[in-house]
Figure 1 (cartoon, rainbow, N blue to C red):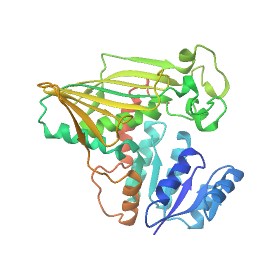
Figure 2 (figure 1 turned 180 degrees about the horizontal axis):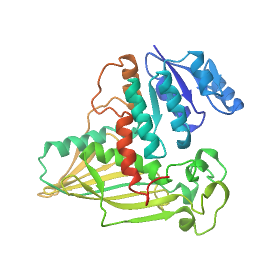
Figure 3 (figure 1 turned 180 degrees about the vertical axis):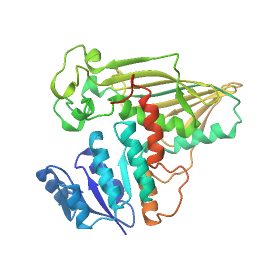
Length: 348
């Protein structure tokens, strides 16, 4: 039995409870939030036996055998560090931390402690992503020509998910001190992880700086308080050019301010003999492939995959096992280094 401790009481913490509690051999043993009232209310709502306001107190209680981190980006390092130093497995929301330095620290610590770690790059849970990888790896479609990758939302201009100026769940994402460069860390981490999974080597095209749109510029008004740091607001739209290991160009874009977009994750791969399109807003189960010869469109269904949540529990239950494609802290560091290249001067 894996007794899971959970940091956070927001929307992602609720989702973690739902996903982990649905698995056999898992119990949610304790929750933690800095705010006593929030921690108590969350424990009562989800019938969690213990609640804490201190990570040290939670660990000292010894009621947990593994830990899930579902708090804002700026608190990932301190919580994961405490749990790793105590020797427990850690499941962390993406991105691992705000900076390369902090991710490097945690990756090194995890390696020394030798405990399972995982970062929740949850697009891996979609069979469609595996279907696209299978098509690429088979090599029957000819050489790669180009790739277009985008993850687009509109909630900053529509407030469709809530008023981000007042609702904590969204407000922190627009705080330069709390988020990881805004949309770059939020949506960019998912998209970069998917590209690395599909193609391996990925590097920024140094001859094309692309474009970076700030919150202030996108909405055309001044901001203050939590929304500003050293006079700057976060990035809400980033276009960039990447290059794969074989030189194939990748057009990359992430945005919170794309009109008409809700949660649109798309990767289009152009081959010599056809075009494959992964569009998770249409299907999480498979992709469409159009042949350049007869323009016939086929739906290619992906194989069922074990979710990130299931895989983490597998690791906790048998920590000496090696899982193919393990999304551990070393992998998260690799993603963090790529994200860092999307911010002039790096993410600080």
